[in-house]
Length: 206
Image (cartoon, rainbow, N blue to C red; front, side, top):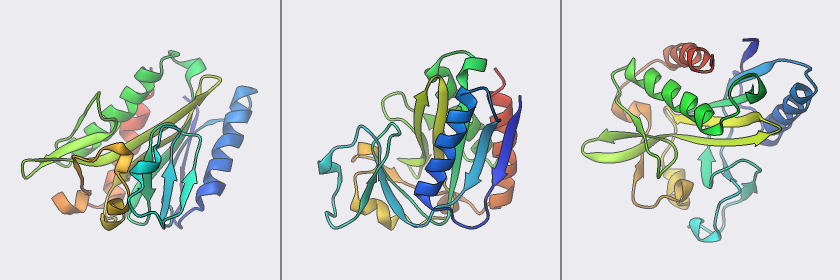
């Protein structure tokens, strides 16, 4: 696999990040350039996927940026681990479910290495954990596929504020809460990124 691993230290503008992804998709479609795994953060922003509904905005005054990814409304901001990817499914199985499963396994395996038990849910996309007998979301996934090249990615709540989620119905799910890793245990962000990178490279090798 020829995957470029990129890590941005300073927060990256959302629109700039998406432009970079789309340019990479275009180049890969022409068999030019490398696949990408990119770890970054955004400043506070609400984004809506193609399946969102207006009634999922609770605080009507917030600005929502509409995107071309799948999924519904979510929030990104400081303290969140965002992983954007540009992965060529033409070189693998042309199976979107398989690709999403590879992402899910990578997140679950990474959290498991820190004794944080998590799981996926076919009805509610994302990664969930049972904390104090409550099922809460710890990671969100939103993917788009163009010419069998998958892009956008996922976010893991690390130390981010959970207050912003009260302004929306996150991912359209209103009967479950949101949690971050720091709510469960104190873990080094660098260690998480190291394990996450390892697990992604393992699970994307199919």
